[in-house]
Image 1: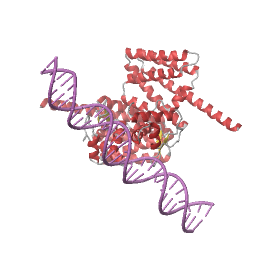
Image 2: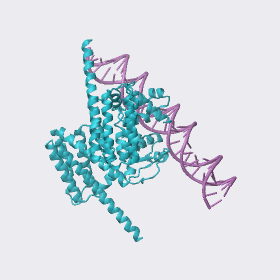
Image 3: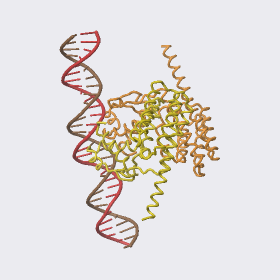
Image 4: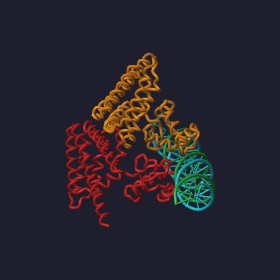
Length: 225
Length: 225
DNA sequence: GACATGGATATTGTATACAAATGCCATCGG
DNA sequence: CCGATGGCATTTGTATACAATATCCATGTC
């Protein structure tokens, strides 16, 4: 992270995820270089990585811009993520070790603590969640699967969705993690796969519902103006 | 392709796929730059792309080398490819159009012609095969799925395997393509998914068998020396 | 003889200058 | 007024120089 190109990558990524750089915005290399306090060379490298992540797009004439995620793109990403994470869960269940299981339980305790408070600790929830999924990926033992999933998780949409989870949704998510842990403890790959599929697709529909609600609100607001 | 970085990418990629740069070989940027007739800047970009393709690896201290594919890596890649291409086939079947179907049939005719001759036209077979799978991916209509599969197809192993296909294997492969086409014509997603899974996994086992045979031959040769 | 240490050497990371291309806009002709 | 054309401004692509870092080998010490 101390290299200039890594700093540029993180900085630009954060600006995209936070919405500071809105979808469709042009990304001039010179301007980004100045923002990040580095030269164009590491910025170019960062842009190439972000392009691979599909966070930025590129016109036919090599101009880069913040990728615009249509609702179909989001559905697409969630579908693929469901398939890949489900496979990871199955493999993890088949390969589970006691130490890994202990770490998964610890991550779940973190999660559990984060949602106990009157006002849920969303950052804590996200940390525990990330850790949980990371351990599964590690136990699944497929570098390739990990690489593919890397481009699908922590997309803008995923983060923003989690932030507006209701307490009920957080509780439900935690319950699914507990059930997944049970499947892991029994080394039941089919069970783990099924729960994980459901876990991700439920998250998708939570997002889709919130998105529709936002759209409706926007329409009403327009009508009122 | 006219850009220096694209030329470098293709050149290095070909050297890896052809085995000219053997697995584990160090890839000095300076040396590659000279080989490709460009400066280090585009070479660096090419190496980053090849790293994303997992054709090259990187030590903890940023030195790049030709990735070494263990038999487990290959199995891993084929498994993922089977899952993803099967999903693409299902989506394609559900979204199939008549023009696309016509193009798929044309690709199959190319394939068919390539394996008719006494000595099969392997290059022609590979072209038809590539076209066939490309159309499916296009009709599937998921940019993300296409991006993920891009890193899994045309790996060194895949290419080398096809080149040593027997006539019987080529004929079998073609027959599966015909069956896939039938599934597409009927818009039967489940059927298409099942055939595609089988199609890829059969290719994997053809590779695995050939690999084992090679290993045995090597052992015997060693013993004879 | 094994191992640590130091510096020479090689390699990668970054900045900058310049070349090539693209986009923009004003001007001109219809 | 609309569209084409030419040239200026902006942006990206490449080469190169220099800085930072890692590797390697020789030397010295225990």
